[in-house]
Amino acid sequence: MDFRYLPMTEQDKKDMLQTIGVKDTEALFADIPDAVRLKKPLQIKEPRSEGELKAELAALANQNVTMKTHASFLGAGVYDHYIPSIVDHVISRSEFYTAYTPYQPEISQGELQAIFEFQTMIAELTGMDVANSSMYDGGTALAEAATLSAGHTKKKKIIVSEAVHPESRQVIDSYCRGQRLEVVTIPHKDGVTDLEALQEAIDEETASVIVQYPNFFGQVEALADIRTILHTQPKAMMVVSSNPLALGFLTPPGNFGADIVVGDTQVFGIPAQFGGPHCGYFASSSKLMRKLPGRLIGQTKDEEGRRGFVLTLQAREQHIRRDKATSNICSNQALNALASSVAMSALGKQGLAEMAYLNVQKAQYMKKQLEAHGLEVMFQHSFFNEIVIKVNGDIQALQDHLLAQGFIGGYHLGRTDDRLKNHMLVAVTEQRTKEQIDIFVREVAAFHAK
Image (cartoon, rainbow, N blue to C red; front, side):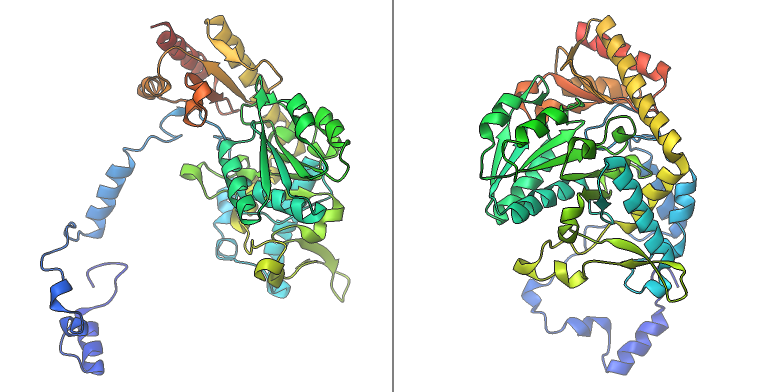
C-alpha cells in the first residue's frame, strides 16, 4: 500500500482484472481510438510520500497572507471578528458536521434544537417575528427577499439602493431577470440612499424597497424616513439587509416596520475562509412565514409532554416544484448556523452588545486619527465599523505598501465604482488594537503625503 488514501494493492488490481477477464489495465481502454490517445506523460509531478507531500503543501500555504499573519482592515462584507474557542469544539462533533436536513426528528433533536435556537436569536436581534433556519449567504438571502416581495404583492418593480453591497445587487439582478422583474437602482447621496430620488421612484407598481443597514459604505441609513416614504404605497415592502453584529448596538430594523430583514452571520463564529462558505439569515413578519424560503424549525411536545423540535409549516417538496415553488432553495447552512448559534450563546446578550460597541468605539478612534493626520474621511453620517477614506495615488499601490508593513488594507472602491478610484473602505473590528490602528494610520498618511 503506497498511498494512505489509495489503499488498492497490486494484488487487488490483479484479482479484479482476472475476475472480469481482462489481461491488464490498458485493455480497459481498447475501445478508445489510438488517434485520440495521449502519447506522452502527463505534465504533473511524480508522486511523493505523505510526509514529503505535507511538507510541500505546508510550505505553499505559508506563502499566503492571512488574518493570522497580518492585521486586517478589510471588510466589505467579510470581517475579522473574535471567535470563542468553544465554537470549533462543538461543530467538530460528528453528529453535527455530518448532518444534512434533519427529516427524522426522533434521531435529530440536537440538530433541530440548535437550528431552533439560531432562529430565535436572529428573530430577537432583528426585531422580527420569525426567522428561517439559514440560507447560503447574505447575498442570496437578499435576492430571495426581492422575489418573495414580488410574489406576495403581485408587483414587478424592485427598488434597490446604490448603497447596497454591489455583489448583492448583482445577485438581485440575476434572480430578478429570471422572474422578469424590473430592478430600479436609487443613487446614494453622500454615502446614504438619496431619499428624494426614492420618493420619485416609488409608485403603485413597487413590490419592495431594498436598503442596507449599515450600508456598504458603513453608514447608518435613516430607516424611519424610508419607512415614512413607503407609507405612500402601502403594498410596497421594506426589505433591509443588515449586519447582525451591528444590531447589538443599533435599533433593530423590525422596530422601524421592516417587512423582511436578511443578512449574513459570518460575523458570529465563522472565519473569513477566503470568502465562504458563510451563512445567510432570513427574518420576516409573521404574515410571511409560510412564504419564507428554506427551512423552519418549530417547538412542540411529544406524546409524553416533553419539549421537542420538528421541521414545520412547509415540506421540502415546496421548494423543488420548479415554477410552483415559493423558492428553489432546498438546503441550508446548518453547520455554519450552528457555529453562529454557539458564538452568540457564548457571547451572551451583554457580550454581544459590548462587542458591537467596541467596533463603534475603535472605528470612531480611527476616524479621528485619520483626520488628525490630514486624511479626508468621506460621508459624515453615523457609522458602525467601516469608513471611506480618500488618498492621493493608486489604491492598489497603497495596498501593496500596507501589505509590506504587515497589514491587509481596505477594499478598493474603484473596483466597483469609477467615481471612487482613489477611495478605500476600511473596517475596524474589536480585534484591532490601538497600536495597530495608530501604525496603520501613519502608514496611510505617509503614502498619502508622497
